[in-house]
Image (cartoon, rainbow, N blue to C red; front, side, top):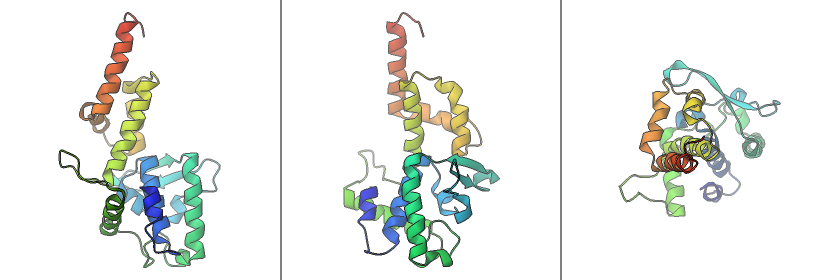
Length: 202
């Protein structure tokens, strides 16, 4: 999807880089779409020793710091350089800007996302669920917990940390993934099978 976003054009414009980077941020951090839209330039200190995103006064009026994976820094820095070179830095303090120089909107992102989904042939599931930007946040949380299971980590003990990272008010919001996601149920079942095969020894 990110490759398709880069190819969406028009050539020489900021738009494909903005949307490709936006997708990458959502997929690698689990941010809500609205949180990424509201990021300002000073919320993304890319030259810091340990770069983080500063999510300010978001849902339920909570703020938090979200660490950035090293592989995310390159595209973010490139997007910032291009944003300045094309003159958008003088038009808005928003980190992600539209072609008109203002902040992105949910409607614009939805149209871009649908265009990219159509390009890569991504449509509704057999159950009728349509692709959405929010699914990237869901996927981030699921993959994190799935990896914890595969590593033999204490998932129950780590869930409160994931809740804080995702900006959940209550840990129960993160526990939902455990019961509603087949991948996690399978990972938990595999953990139990390994436990049983070892005679109940952790």
